Length: 330
Image (cartoon, rainbow, N blue to C red; front, side, top):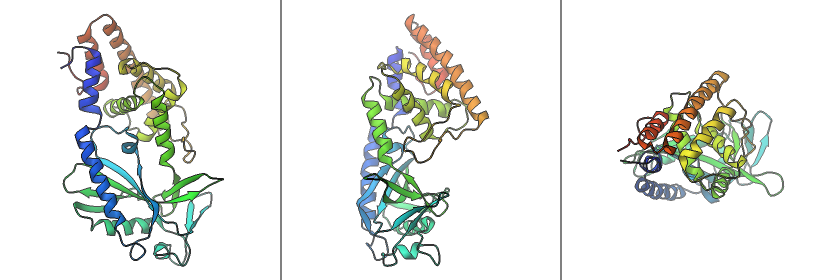
């Protein structure tokens, strides 16, 4: 049990916020095994051939910004496009396949050579059912991935079919299911590079600050905020400031103030694909702003008490911000 704010935050991050290192090692080994199983799917006979990249990590787990519990891991499986081309109609993105491509024509909308992402997901689902050590494969509710449940682990895998596409010049990106049968752009490389580069230039662990804010949001009795938006909100703060200190409590005060002042603003997708990713309604933004403001003042009180060497009182204030999972003073 901690006697200082510093040790309280250290224990909190280790025991309640970050993914447990032991479980993370198991998850990494399990993920590697799963990808190796998918690579064994019949190439070009019953299943489309894979691109030479084969797979790519995707989502907050790959960016190391996920918090406990480790409940899902996203993996993109990259199919060989076999000279398919994409067409942006303005309303949606279509993938037009070649008539002599392996398997892909059978996954198109009836009477066309336009690839149906729901059919692709269904093909993944059928093949994933046969992978050993996994209990059940089902299409995710939003139709964008196949969820694979494991027999012996607490997390599931979201398997996302994709194709690599070429944009202007040498630019490349990826197309993944849009949930409606067509496709949408993404590029996990951009998000990972942004997260890593921002983290590298600061004294504080920006990864830990993202995790702390996600934990705060999930326990603050506020409207649900999508993880990706919240992550980019914190990253926007740390790309806007030049300096930070190593202490999470000092930084948390600043980040709460930033959320208060910016939660009503639009936030453009850093990849340039999705437009404004602030999904909250005006009323929801108001509620988040009010809570961030309330907790900002509590955090300022906590910092003042710490400066007065009143560690027990300061830690109690931080428990009011983060909830009962934050350690008690002892």
